[in-house]
Image 1 (cartoon, rainbow, N blue to C red):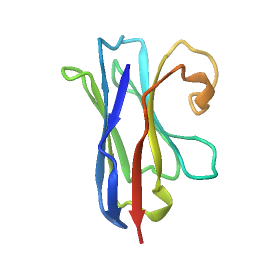
Image 2 (spheres, rainbow, N blue to C red; image 1 turned 120 degrees about the vertical axis):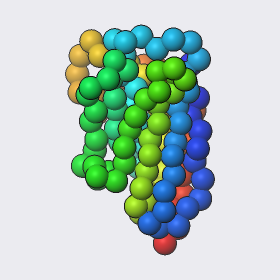
Image 3 (tube, rainbow, N blue to C red; image 1 turned 90 degrees about the vertical axis):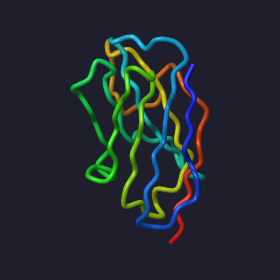
Image 4 (spheres, helix red, strand yellow; image 1 turned 45 degrees about the vertical axis):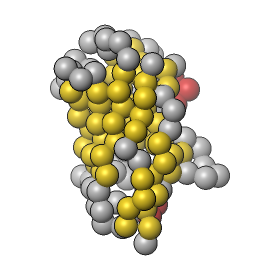
Length: 124
C-alpha cells in the first residue's frame, strides 16, 4: 500500500517535496513512479526510480527541476520539485510496478499499484 503526501499551495518558483511511503517491504525488483493529473487532462508520467537504485527517468517537462530519490530504510520515495510553474498544478500520485512488467514505463495503465493523490497547486 502506498501513501502519498506533501502537496500544498506554493508560489511559482517555489519548491515542494512529495513523499510516497510504502507499508511493507518494497521488493528490489520494483520501481516507484510519480504521475500527475490536472483537471480535464489525462494522467501523465512524471518520474520513476528503481527501488534497487541506479535508474531514474523523468518526463521532459520536469527534467532539471524535479528529482526523484528513495530512502530504503524508510520505505519511502521522494519527489523534490523545484522552480515550480503554474502548469505543474495537478494531483500527484505515486505508483509501483515490477520492473519485469512489459511495456512503456510512461503508461499509467501498466502500473498496477497506486496510492491516493496529493494536490499540488502553483500560483502565478
